[in-house]
Amino acid sequence: MGSQDTDLVRRLEQLPRACKRRVKQVIFSQAIPNTVEEKIRNCDPAAIGKLRWGQMDTQNRNAFNERRAAGELVRNRDQEIGIPARPVSKPPRLSAGDAT
Figure 1 (cartoon, rainbow, N blue to C red):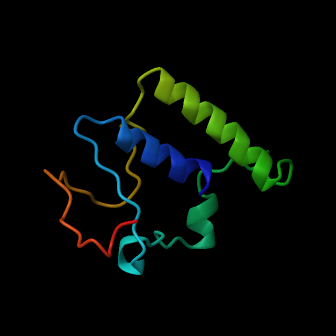
Figure 2 (figure 1 turned 120 degrees about the vertical axis):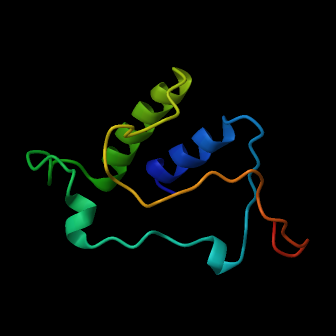
């Protein structure tokens, strides 16, 4: 997982009554599809080509760790990005073979 994925999981773990499960079924483990334009929409044009992916990921991971340590769990509060989501009171029940 990249730093953004890890940050999301770590922030969810910090929520009250957090519950995390590892799943094997593909339906529960899918990436959000993005076009190339969507992937780079918020990138700084001056930075393109100056960092390798690993360097960028390390910088992001450090920034995300600092934000979580400061209690900042909400990201992009005032921005219209992402996909629609709704609160869930508790996760769906999985059978013993679904979780690892």
